[in-house]
Image 1 (tube, rainbow, N blue to C red):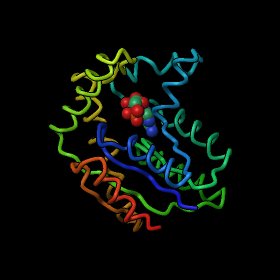
Image 2 (image 1 turned 120 degrees about the horizontal axis):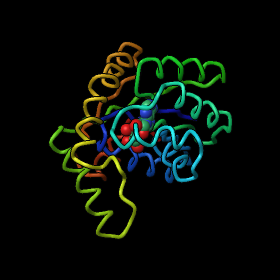
Image 3 (image 1 turned 90 degrees about the vertical axis):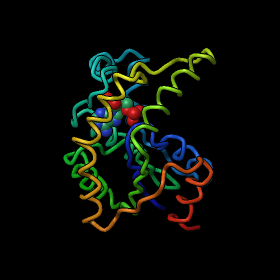
Image 4 (image 1 turned 135 degrees about the horizontal axis):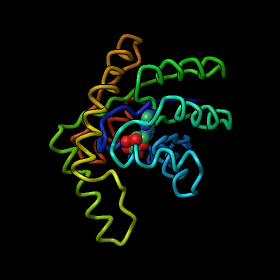
Length: 193
Ligand code: AMP
């Protein structure tokens, strides 16, 4: 069983690659973004509380996302967990280490997906335009404005995790500018068979 973190800015392709891993390796994707959006759709108190923060592109509190992850970890996974969009702060990273330790689980690899900033903004704005054209729901935070805030949050609060995991000896970096298929191959190569 392999447990990995996909680390990277918004629009890096973490969700896309996580879906591939779910299919090919029977892993379990834990996306705190998806969980928070579900909470909004189902109209829970927590969902209502975080809606405005998310629409603006800011991070919700550590306490909320750590609680969500704790619940999901307890459900277990056959193929291992993919942490997608979590952790996003140093306290979240410490909390994850503690949770995994308590459950006797190991964090195998942190894969950092590197993508140029201009491309990130372009990808997210295009994602919104494509969803709209296809009549699908558009994420409230897939706007150029919210994207700037999301990038700022990433650089201020999440990017320190790169050094954190490097120091722990877990970090692997890949070029996220490649095609989806090439990125997938890089991840497969890192994860082995
Ligand atoms: P994502 O789908 O990963 O891009 O997340 C969308 C939004 O959900 C983020 O901009 C944050 O507002 C919130 N969010 C998701 N994951 C976290 C996290 N680990 N910590 C704090 N906020 C999060």
